[in-house]
Amino acid sequence: MMRARAIRGALALLLAGAAPALAQEWEPKRVAELQLLDKVTARISVLRATVGEPAGFGTLTIRVAACNARPPDEVPDAVAWMEISDSRRGAGGRQVFRGWMFANAPGVSMLEHPVYDLRVLDCK
Image 1 (cartoon, rainbow, N blue to C red):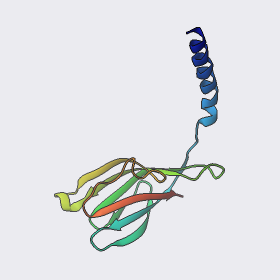
Image 2 (image 1 turned 180 degrees about the horizontal axis):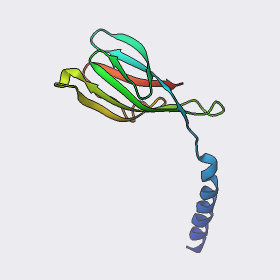
Image 3 (image 1 turned 120 degrees about the vertical axis):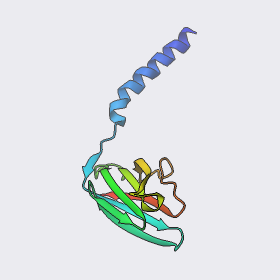
C-alpha cells in the first residue's frame, strides 16, 4: 500500500514536470482556409474567409471570429472559432453552428447540416 502511494506520488511529480513541455502554443492568423461540400451538387470548394468579416457559401453565412495555427516548428494544425447561419432557416438567417472547429480533428466539433459540410483546412 505504501509502495503504491509512492509510485502514484512519483508519477504525479513526473507528469507535473512534463506539463509545461507538453503545452502547445497557437499563433493567431488573419485568414481561415475552409473546405466546403455542397452535398446536393457534390461540389467541393475552398473558401478563404478573413477573420471578422462575413463570407458566404450557398445559403450559409460564415463569420470566423478567430483562427489559430501551430508554429512552423510544431506538428501542423489549425483551429477556428466560427459562427455560421443559414438564410433558408428563417428571416435574417438562423444560427446553425457556433464554436471551435479543428483541422486535425474535424469530428470533434462539426457543422450538422442537411446540404453542406464544412471543414477547416488551415489558418494563414
